[in-house]
Amino acid sequence: MVKPSGKIRTITTRCHACQAYIRFDRQPELFDIVTCPECKEEFEVIELSPVQLDWPSDLLGDDEWAIDEDGDHPSDGQGA
Ligand SMILES: [Zn+2]
Image: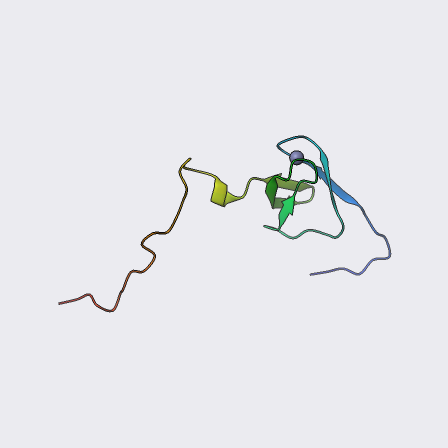
């Protein structure tokens, strides 16, 4: 929901990587991906009030590249 208001609030938060301020030109939405203007790190919006960022979940976990090598799992050919 978007509440129309005459005030333009500048929303800022801090980069987790370099602590630079990241400004939002508009009200961010949950799970928006933002890029730090300083270190170009990408973050995901996990909280809106106040705005908090976290590293995108895609980057968490294993250090290895997560590549779907076997994304095709034929489900119709099974049975019997
Ligand atoms: Zn940064």
